[in-house]
Image (cartoon, rainbow over all chains, first blue to last red; front, side, top):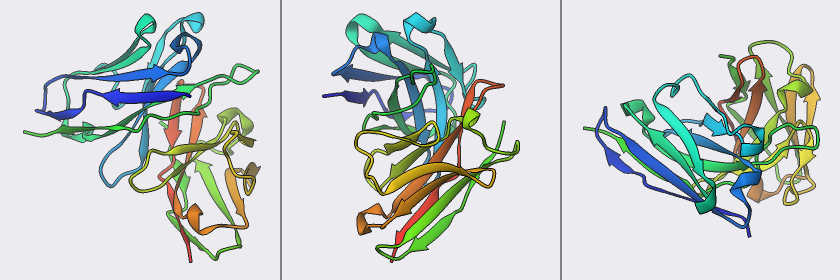
Length: 124
Length: 111
């Protein structure tokens, strides 16, 4: 059974850092890209960024709203993906989801399994 | 960054058919935007419904279908069930800047 479980959320002050973890099971994290999405209270979903699988370079892409502040990485032997969030702002308050992203035969990324989400609250 | 627009809300009767659309500020939505559709019910994690315009996941009910319609991505529900009441989000790829952009979501009411 494919599972993704986020942890590490909570209350943090503006300007501080927080690291979210996404522990995966039921598949090898080596074989998939991992994306992070978020949803602020009362708002819609927002794509945060993703990390390519190692065979595609393991490189990352980010939304403009978090670029330079957030970093996605993976620890493949531990089957964990991380979202390191620095210089947190009030507007980063949201439920954060990690999502598995396979590729089609044509090499196009898509999205299938989601974690249950974890709340991050940025407030003084 | 492109802006992706969806109908804010739609209402459909049980057993009816409804089409939700997804437009891009950059112009015509094509297969090269690799449209994805997601369903989000309150208190639950979103679920993936459609990828690359019209491909269903193994768990996607047959009554859901994706297409390109009038320059937009579209999600059609045929034979709507009460449990289809949810928020629906589309997601488009912008290859020029390697980013994905969500639409604002459509709140579908089954009444």
